[in-house]
Image (tube, rainbow, N blue to C red; front, side, top):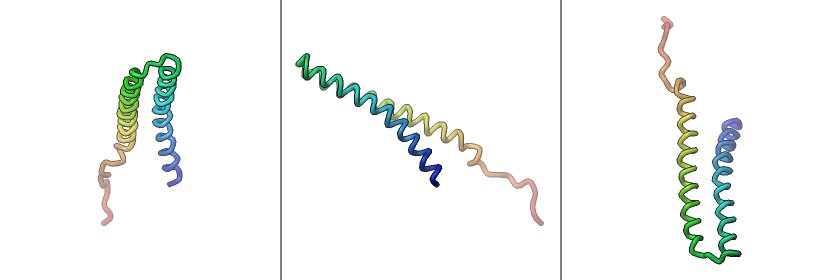
Length: 87
């Protein structure tokens, strides 16, 4: 139980760290456009592009993780045939 919780935490932190990179980049670009350039119309574009990247990352990495977990546990989900009977 504890090992499964730790493994799930590692997977969640892997996805969270990847998406946090997009958050930090979007905050940096927004600050640059608000502070120095005074180009407020770019902020909407930054928000839309970062939202698309975050969602795509979530779908792709989450899908890959679920796929590899399903492939890894696949042989264990098959019924085990009885090779002998106790009679």
